[in-house]
Image (cartoon, one colour):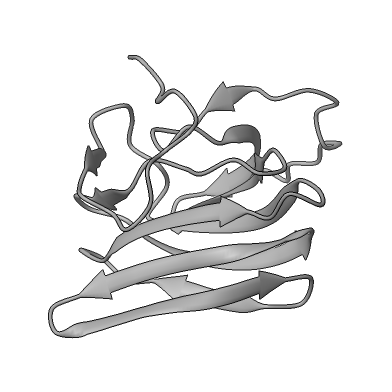
Length: 135
């Protein structure tokens, strides 16, 4: 039996994602984990793909864009509060925040994030402006 877990959102970042965004790690269970990601105003993440996980994103605040490519399918989606989207296993993706404020996203990773070797840097449409995390 899995015990209950309860926590408050950390006041400061608890990690830096492989794409360079700030992360506040939240709770997880055997099937997945949750975290809040934030990219500062005007910043561009590093384009990545994941080896074993897929994600669901829900934009909490700010505005930006997300590029996703998987096989022949490729698109850029406008991000703003209330937008929910998926990042399927193997998809290449990159996101950026507009200059008017930070972009904040709630992300669910399935299965839970396994560690630093999960993400692989790939070519994306925009030049990244944030340093990537180092293991």
